[in-house]
Length: 437
Image 1 (spheres, rainbow, N blue to C red):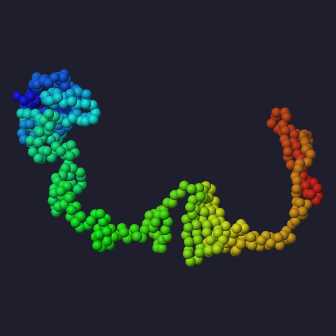
Image 2 (tube, rainbow, N blue to C red):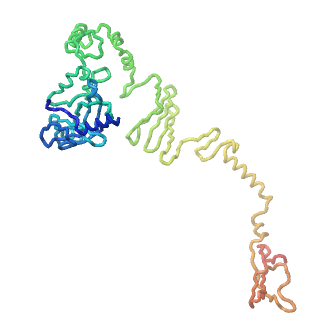
């Protein structure tokens, strides 16, 4: 018998018999690995657990072997985060946690971190249809380090290709890096082969026979045609008409297709950006001084420079001349001009005040009003009378008096005394008068 092999445990055989009798499938879900307490051992069908389990995980892949319908192939992965042990024994577990199969293997050291370890487990069973395959897998044996992947080699080209691709070693194409076949052909149109140094040398010899590299293109008989043939004519034309970044003069139009243009400066007094009319001499400049946007310029070559500013902090506008809004004008003297005033507002105010002053003599003067209108009001001296007297009491109705008080002193709810005063008004030109008298 081989040194390393896998067997079904006694419990596994019982499960197979139960599956055949009842139709209830065997479900394999997990794997276990152990170190056999530091020594190599042979699998024992009586085992219900590993000799010394060190790690348990989910089966990564599980399929029936395409070569033998009664063989299962299980892929086992030890992730990078576990380790610090040596794998010498492996087992497959059911979903009920029972050891279904056990195997031994060459010693495989698993350090913590750095690398993961992939193993493939092949197991002969009586009937694979009785076993539920929870995940898709590939087939194979345990990959033994001491065999240097010979197990894959003997499986043929397709198996080798699948194995390479599983670790990211792909065939090279124009879209991806990978393995390519070398070729010395100098007239091949293949996009899956790579040129050998011999092919490169032949191509270089052909090129050197046509153009001397030490001439650096000086021996090209028709440079413009050469530039056109290699597709660089538009680039050369654009370069010939390019604007120098260090300063230049444009004679044509500049069109900006972007939605906005940003000009950044770190200076407190930014550079001025100017627009000039070379025929009239008029010019307009814009700059940013601190938090003030300045627009300034002159109407002709020797004209006066005028400056308008907008303060970004408080929103104030400052202009040296009049402000206009349609036909309305706000001038530098503070006056307004507009249709609603019929011209300047100071002319409208002057005309209306004159009309008022012209009609002032038809009205009462302030002095006359002060002399002939009531300027004060007061009460006269208080007068009192008993209400309940025989044969009579109280006061009769008399012009000029107002009732100012009423008292009750003996608790019989009938008023005892009544009080009154005269109401007096004052005319500056005539003195005090009692109202109504």
